[in-house]
Image (cartoon, rainbow, N blue to C red):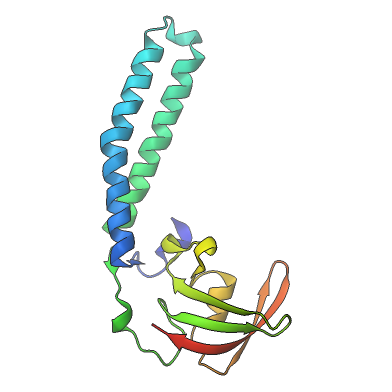
Length: 163
């Protein structure tokens, strides 16, 4: 889990994300394991296991499934629900909605800062541990943030912070 466990093992999640992860875990344990048992049974029925590539593939897939289950269980065991109303609005924190102006292109962008487990760039949810997230944390409206990313340097003016 590496980067996700920097706060004494605590994983901060919104209530919605916690429910999603619990649902995913339930599905993997119930349906995922049942499907895997069926695949292994079918592969086993094809004869000699020492030369059965289908059986080997099914066992490897089973290992990946169990690893996913274990990681989800670990995340959920460390989860703490965080509510945006519990946090101040004066600076950029986790669960802040930020309105930024790209100072190179003058483009206006909106992001929600979330935990690494909830990050989804397609939905404009950026992790507080990403280069952009780290560069925005603690800043106030009106400040400029210069952020070094692999593609170069980004420069944003923080126009607005909300919850």
